[in-house]
Amino acid sequence: MSHPGERGRALAVSLLQHSAQWQAAQARAQRLAAGRTADAADATQLAQDYRTLAYDLARARALLPDSRTREYLERTYAQAHATLYRGAWHPLDSLLRLLREQLPRAVRWLLPYLAWSTTIFVLSALAGYALVRHYPELIALFASPELIASVEHGRLWTEGLLNVVPSAVLSVQILTNNIVVSLFAYCAGFLFGLGTLYILGLNGLMLGAVFAFTAQHALARPLLEFIVAHGCVELSVMCLSGAAGAAVGEALIRPGSQGRMESFRRAAARSGTVLFACTLLLIGAGLIEGYVSPDPRFSFTARIAIGAGYWLVMVLLLSGRLWPRQRQAARRIIE
Amino acid sequence: MSGGAEFIVDSATGIDVALPVAGPGARSYAFIIDWHIRLVLALAWYAGAALLYSGRLTLAAPLASDTRWFTTVLAPALAIYFLYHPVVELALRGSTPGKRMAGVRIVNRHGAAPGAGAVLIRNVFRLIDSLPLCYGVGLVSVAMTAEHLRIGDLAAGTLLVYERPAPAPAGAAALGTARDPAAAEVAAELLQRWPQLLPEARIRLARALLAAQADGAGTHGADDRYWQARLRELLRSGGVS
Picture 1 (spheres, chains in turn yellow, red):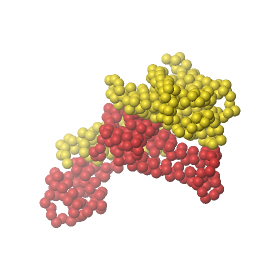
Picture 2 (picture 1 turned 120 degrees about the horizontal axis):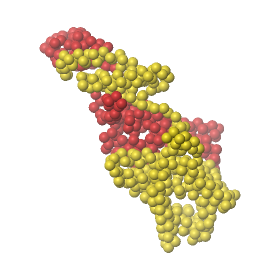
Picture 3 (picture 1 turned 90 degrees about the vertical axis):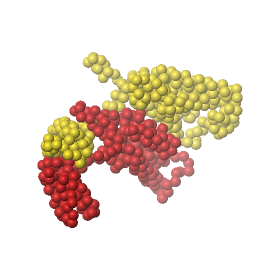
Picture 4 (picture 1 turned 135 degrees about the vertical axis):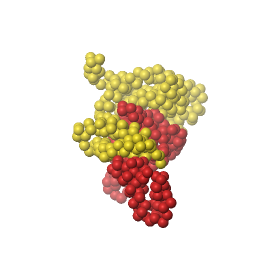
């Protein structure tokens, strides 16, 4: 127990005479945080409470450092702070701003990483193709026994797929798997980019290897027909999420002056926007893969048109041109 | 005082805000409650929808692939289980029923409720935090960082803090008239907890408190009521000097 001098005691006594005010402030902060009041005067009064609490807390830290009063004031002040800085919540506006403004900025920032991730993916695919072409037995490393058996019998594993699995089920299975792979390629960037490199490389190798294997059995054209409608966007999104993962990895390897964790946090926050767009695009690609790709009624031309069209939509979405630009124009005029 | 780690936020008033950081225990407690809630909700949906769909007392899936069964029974149950955290955290602005019960909430680096982007990023990184199983990576990260952050929190710039409102100091109204508020505060709390304490313990505490005020030491044989009266006097007058 401390023994403050007479002056300290007198100051503490005057401080404690505000206790009724603190309790009123606490009740007001709770009411506003829970949304139980829309009273403007109440909200204005909270700003005044916040200043009073700050002033009293500073005095309590000096006069009564190890007291319940100080603890109470710390928590009440923190509660008032959280309520005041809660901010407005307009999810639809936030979503539109994200797609119209933040996404194109993030994609522009990621362009160098995208060039690298695409190069790695393409090189891996070429390597996979060359490997299986020269050493056909290596296909066992990249494909399942069922897939190998089907191709060796002269049939693509995708033939008659809709007789076994309905389109809706197939779509959900595919889009879930693709989204998980895409998110994982991004998150694996946390391992200093090595995880992203591994996922991009492995997927590239598998694609190239399967193409070489089907080409050996004269099935490369049917495989191309199967993947062209959904694959353009799916593979682009794989490279894009790989680029986001690489950016996160580089932020950890070369953090610059801001510190490793801060650099990681900034890179993750910027590239996270792209991941959101990737998820939306993969939902569309999954639906195409479930409803269009296995359906023999769609001609090769129609599949190319769908694939190219959806790819164009992806480019417009990522560049922010899919949405009206009135607000940006208005902002430029104001600036 | 809580004694745990604190996260300090600058304030426009010039007086920083100290937020008590939630540790691995509180985080795990919140997660386990949420895990049970989402499991029960997903199973309830599956059971209810499967019974309605089949019209019989069976939860088994149809033998042949069935789009309607998939879209009305299985897919919603899986969506409830896997999308519970991002959807509820977005809807409740950084909170979930489990976090509320554990008395914690998510805040950003300014001590405010996190934005939608931060909530989504911290949930995407669950993929890494949950590796290799039972949130192993996340738990190691929480144990090794000063602010008890999992990888998702590091990426999103968020952290978990306690949000339990502190009870008003015992006898707060009376403290304003006491001569020694710090001693009076302890006396008020001791009086408040008097019925819950064992008689020997409360008398020992009262004697120690009054001894520190240079009064009451050496008073042997006094009964329970005597010590209560002395404490009330201390509370009223701020001690005997």
